[in-house]
Length: 91
Image: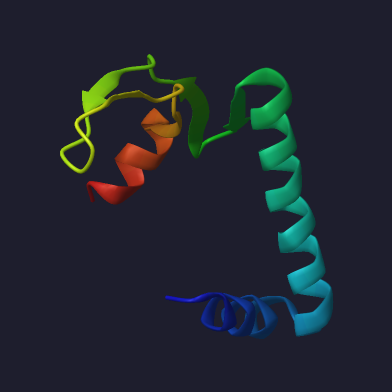
């Protein structure tokens, strides 16, 4: 589902305007992003934990010009679900 569908479903359940719901969701996502940047981890109770990990730099051979190139580490986001979420999904 995309964002419009989620906004419509929340509007039907709560009666709050889509504009207000979208503002809250966008701010919530921004807070998760900022928490990942600052703490390298963001937890949502009964949902799961997002963690930011940086891979090791590595080098590879460029077939175009024959040179050896090195990359910086890449940031990756991992998600670990909570036990509560796994129980609800496995029903």
